[in-house]
Amino acid sequence: MIKDIKELRTFMLEGLEKLRAKEITPAQLNAESNSVGKLIGFAKVELEYRKLEGSTPKMDFLDGIAENVTVAIDKKIKSLEKKDSDKE
Image (cartoon, rainbow, N blue to C red; front, side):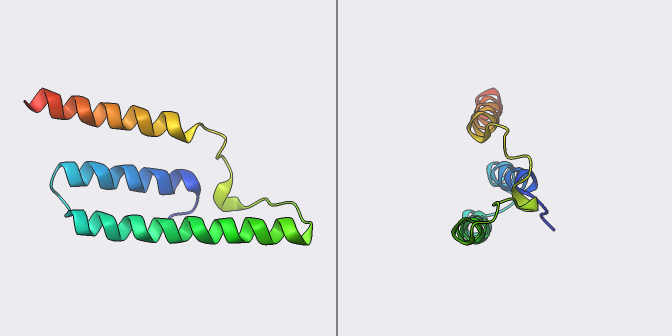
């Protein structure tokens, strides 16, 4: 079970790797991505609710999010692109 945003990110990046390795189909990755989008939507709703009620919007799921997500994803994409170019 995915416990926090870091595990969620890892899960999605692993899905991309599996797709490139043809271990899963695009439809399977799409289904996983759709589910992840719903989880993120739930987190947004909870944060907004807590903000409206005036409480501190702290959630275990989002702890540790300070790491720069964009940099991590870019690094992973470059790594996958390098693997693809090495195969050619």
